[in-house]
Image 1 (cartoon, rainbow, N blue to C red):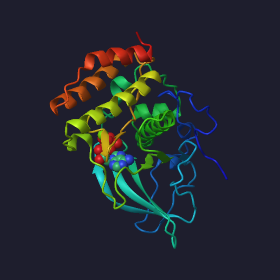
Image 2: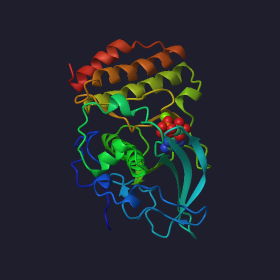
Image 3: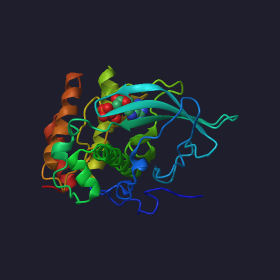
Image 4: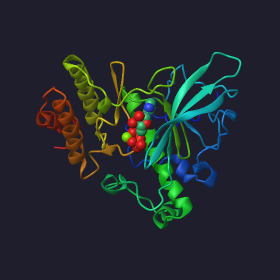
Amino acid sequence: MRDHSDFSSAPARRRRRFDDEPRFVKRSPRPELESPERDEDTGWTSWDSPGVLHGPEPRPDWVITELAARDTDRGVLKTGKEADVHLVERAVPDTERRMLLAAKRYRAADHRLFHRDAGYLEGRRVRESRVTRAMAGRTAFGKEAIAGQWAGAEFVALGSLWQLGVSVPYPVQLLGTELMLEFVGEADGTAAPRLAQVRPDRQRLERLWEQLVDALRVLARAGLAHGDLSPYNMLVHHDRLVLIDLPQIVDVVINPKGAEFLARDVTVVARWFTAKGLPVDPEPLIAELVDDAGIR
Ligand SMILES: Nc1ncnc2c1ncn2[C@@H]1O[C@H](COP(=O)(O)OP(=O)(O)O)[C@@H](O)[C@H]1O
Ligand SMILES: [Mg+2]
């Protein structure tokens, strides 16, 4: 079987850095940066489209790789300033095989940088190239390339975290500015609520906090911080906490503000848990994580 995976050749635990340039940007003929066109109810699967990258191995067995499959857009899960998330069903006709995906489509930023472009890019090595010049000049191609970079960064981050065993949606594929993820929710297409939307009792709060601390420890030991952690960027699927929205993942060792990002993440979530009835002190946890990351 042909393998497009960006991960399979890498040693399982190699740490990917935010500034690893996604390969599709380097060999970027324009069409690869564009979101795939998809006719409602008639689109072939984009699994094998030119330029597509697949998520890490071992691939979960629910991922549909058959070329006879078709992708159907089932509607919008959420629209945002920087990306829209759609529910997509990929199914093999005349069989029972189907899966649901969350398709996150980054927009080409029109008039400004993504709000995350500022501090997160510090310490990142930007190579001068035709693509980076187009990005700086905000040509149509440059804007598309920026959106593609964020999609690529999130794809790489999710793949790395998934391989580390952190609870994140499995990144099924990346195609230009579109990222297709494991759908976190019910088989009928109801998405799992964000943490901000649930009202857990004390016992449930404790279990969610434990899962969060475990995830933060794994991240810190890998030298990483989420960078935009909040009760809006975590989903609660039954009793499982799932981290999402990771394009700005921070390499806390390289980024001069790494420790600040880490502390901010912990402070924001500790405040939420405290307000919901589980008093947690962010300070000892921040100290522990900073220590785990080896940045002090
Ligand atoms: N894998 C997923 N499964 C189910 N819903 C998702 C998934 N990814 C994102 N969503 C939904 O889309 C929303 C926006 O996704 P997010 O990655 O946070 O993007 P944004 O940059 O717009 O905040 C989430 O709050 C969640 O409701
Ligand atoms: Mg979000």
